Image (cartoon, rainbow, N blue to C red; front, side, top):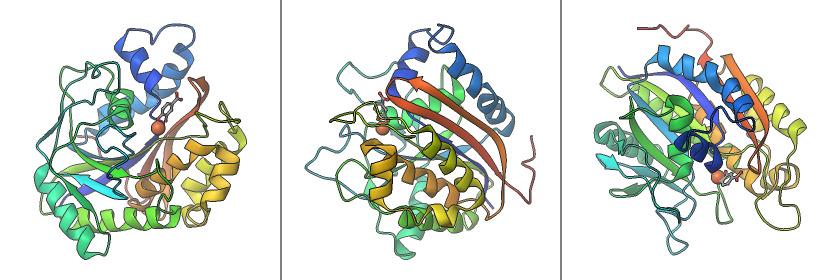
Length: 286
Ligand code: DHB
Ligand code: FE
């Protein structure tokens, strides 16, 4: 049976992707951030996931404001990097996992999560930057990917509670998949940030660190936090953090925090990363 070997939460700051693409990881501005995520890269190298379910939001790249699915799943064999205005990132195409993706779609929809099925889509920084955070600059991405999009761009986004329950449904689906894949799940976006308006540049480190604490030890309480609190405390784009709850819902109730990184500033965003394993089972290294 396929199994979830762990979960990673990470910001998906586009400037961090550009720093990787343009050889700036050792620059004084970026070096402290990349030093902090080195243990994340070490863990991923040892854990060797076969497939990553990447929970992210599309930033009006694949979906325009004409069509806004609340939850969407990519079932294609391949996903090209999106052109977000500066040409596509020079990173490898993302290889999908159609068998797992269709299994997830069927299981989630029959479990009452009405996923939009996407046969063709480019993937933007919300998905490709987390891959670069984990894998740096490989010639090919070392794992296959199931993209799972959550709308956090246009109000109303789904509640944290709904996202947490979606994660629990993903767990049931993966546990029932008749393969031997080692599955890693990622929740991306956040942490506190606001990109426009009077409070542009907002960062709330206290909120972010409390979020990480509760994500680890009391996720069902964090899942009850409503939109207004995210907006007030973490800024308009802080709502991206609900996607970390999808990741957390797919793990056991008890988890082991393997590594936590937090760094300010990167671009406009309070930048966090966390690696979690199910507490009952030390992830065996191949
Ligand atoms: C930034 C962060 C994001 O999550 C995003 O989608 C776009 C920009 C930033 O910090 O610049
Ligand atoms: Fe974003």
